[in-house]
Image (cartoon, rainbow, N blue to C red):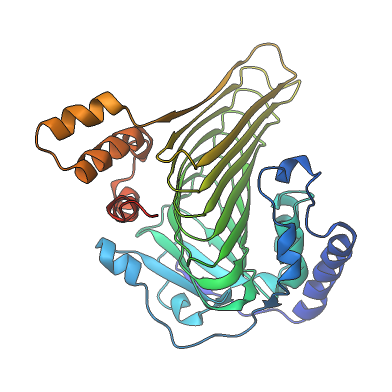
Amino acid sequence: MPGSMMQPETGSDSLLQGVRADALARWQQDGWPGPRVEAWRYTRIDSLAERGFVPASALAGAASGPGAVAAAGISAHVIRFENGVLDPSGLAGLPDGLTVSDLAGDEQALARLQQLAPKGHPVSTLSLATMTGGIVIDVDGVVTPPLMLLFEGRDEASSTHPAILLRLAPEAHLQLAEWHQSDVGLAAPLIGVDIAAGARLEQVKVQAEGASTTHLAATGVALGEGASIAGFSLSTGGVLARLETHVVFAGSGADCQLSAIYMGRGKQHQDITTYMDHAVAECTSNQIIRGVLDDSSRGVYQGRVHVAPDAQKTDGQQMARALLLSRKAEVDAKPELEIYADDVICAHGATVGELDATQLFYLTSRGIPYETARAMLIEAFLIDTIETIENDVLASLLRPVAEAWLAGGETA
């Protein structure tokens, strides 16, 4: 089917206001999580309440264009958000099989986004309470070229809350890139992904926000029978970042491959949090997480795999490894298994280490400069994770970001 952009429906204001009012009531009751909330024990954000952000609601300036895409040398259709607000120019010339519509005018879509949003989650609740609109992206068939969602913005006093529902029809296929590079105070995207039976989503996400930005992302994914998602996240920017993904296996035979790399220096705080809900039988999930931390930076990985009593034949794997480049850097890793079925294959693990001094000596003793040798060892540590990306086009978006971080050298 040809790509198109539908117009908002009459009565959209009342629908949106109802969702916002319900979320606002929950937000006023719960607010930001305090230090006693276990899910936020390692990532404290209660100080955000003191900063008094103002939700951004208008374009902050002229479009700067998808420079990141051009730099990577790939061809992609770009839908751009400025300060969390949709730039409608990206809706022209949508590829066949791709339809974008107004979230505010679609009662069914609004309800589905609320279902997919992580429950009891401050970012989900705040974004639903403050959103002024959003989009629904429908995919039918095999869509080419890749779709990029580009998030930019400028205003350290503002918070942005883009809301997106992505729906893949049965047997559909989409390559998706999320690229975050704003300089706002708080970037809090809420994205719901509904993948129908037999459909497949290949996704990469780059979090390369400005140095003063707090990035708190909430993503909810539902997988139908035989559906699959291959997701990869790279988090290097922001002063504090938390990329949280909740996946529900709603149909048997579904598969989720979710990998991530976080890289921090200075006083950055990088958090990767996941929740895999194996609700039905014969589904697989695999997570590979790598962290590299320098200076006084801190990393967090929290990953829970829940296997319901009827979810027999579940295969759930998670492995987190972190590399500390400084004695002042810290990492907290908490992989968890919660299993109620008896015929499953599940495993988890976590390790923390330093660069191998023997290998570093070997390389430098053969004339390789210290910084180059150090970068080679860090790259070797990350390589098995990057190689999980089967799609070369999407992988090409990530490598320049990782290489730029490695070329940044040590900081005081």
